[in-house]
Length: 211
Image (cartoon, rainbow, N blue to C red; front, side):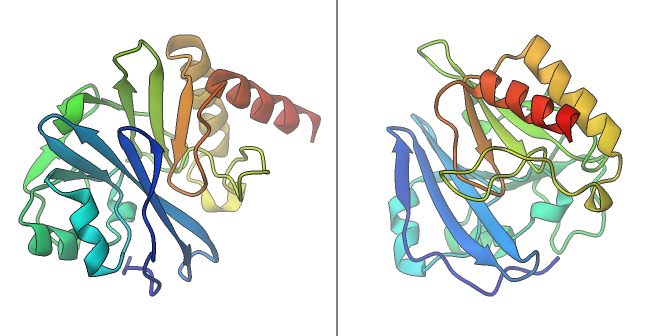
């Protein structure tokens, strides 16, 4: 899938080590969101979106670009050329617009200490990244597992017709509650939830059961 036509005009700090930018994505008629994790070894870009070139300096030094799936290539290849950094993509991802520098599988460790989780449902080759923070809190970069319209909106599932296996998505969320109990959630489509992440997952399941 090609890049969104829009470019982000601002980068914001949501935590002292997490940066965020967003665009209204013409390809999906919804917002898309990108994240960057600052580490002592450099910044890791997660599903990066197009942004004004002048803003790229705020991300430096960048050590890697990591994709939660082949469907989130976004601006990765152009940023790789501009920044001279490697791209990490799923091992079995095919039909990409570029050749990844590295491939990963479930349970691998990516740059920045990100651990790869395989939460299928939206697509089989769909991954999330777990960041165990120094203070003991667990941050989860969700990919397409759940989405959120704005700061005042709850998490919700991607419409079933756009998922590969909607029932498995629900099972994945239940498993994350049982096994990970994340404190923070960073969707690929929507703003972050910085507190009570597990409670937010429980709430989306409860609303789903009532529908």
